[in-house]
Image (tube, rainbow, N blue to C red):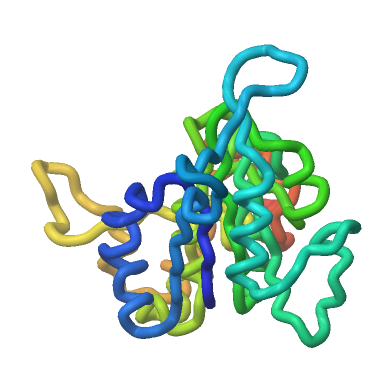
Length: 252
Ligand code: ADE
């Protein structure tokens, strides 16, 4: 999967994209991440990327021109008057262009699974007070928020999105089953985990984990997962895929 990231601050990504799972996925060719500095596509000696808002109100707005130029040059195409969305998908590589903004639809594991099917994504990091509305209207194909709070820009949300997608690419995690048990992947929070020692400072692990009884262990894990979701995120239960046994347990 390829990610093209458009940002005014490419240096923010260095550590996060080099270490751990993302770093290894890149090394092994599962993911390709290309950072593009929007400033490189701005005109004039000073390569200005922002300007004051029409109508006043203070703050700076990201100009449309450097962003449209960047997309046209990176993809080797010309955006028509009607906008990027009007381009026929055939014969030209036309990845989704996602703007990270607190005004977008709120990111979820279900959205991540859908996006992970794409071979290529362009991620546009907003900054300053905002971005010229014509970028929204004629360029971006989707707007995503990582939650109902405001960050200084779309760079950290982009890292969140890229990390979430990369671990879903087949082969990135050693164990293919690992993501299917993650919290949220089946609509529930995950059951608790323990490792050695079996007794830590007088706190023992649940006996079931030492019993060797696989079927009972699976039931215990499912019930812990249900109980935890009920206690912490009851809103998730309404949408989760629950069996009759699950419903019976929850009613108890
Ligand atoms: N930019 C600023 N805040 C954001 C948020 N919550 N999600 C996505 N992009 C943002």
